Image (cartoon, rainbow, N blue to C red; front, side, top):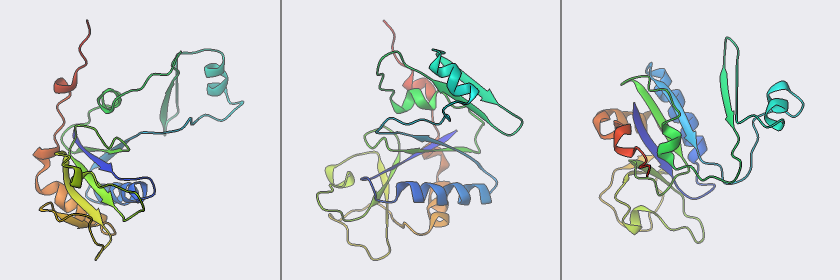
Length: 184
């Protein structure tokens, strides 16, 4: 499994880029999964449906599937902040052709592409010395807040960004054994 993060301030275009990257990876016959951090409460279940009713009744996990889809919802008794590596552990490793896009974990210890748009008050992670930022995705001709030696990729060209990622897929190979949580 190969993992790359998409980081940047809210509204910078991470989700739109992820959509384009998914299509570009799929066009090359590769599988793609997504790990997304949500800042607010969210619900993927429809109130009144059986899976929602099971969850409301107190089920710890609800798995629902048909011949097209599988979904798992887990409820925590109290707030629990999962890190990106715990979320990645929930995915099925489908082998070397499987890519995972991680959106929203800007401080994660993963190779990341920073999506940059000049926004009032925005601070670029690469400019702060984040060693995990491997490239920048920006609108063509956009000014950067700091000079960089990092590759600068066209935000509007997901195929170009996938080409960049596929140039050195070993850089993005994910080793889950490195991120096993220590239990006392």
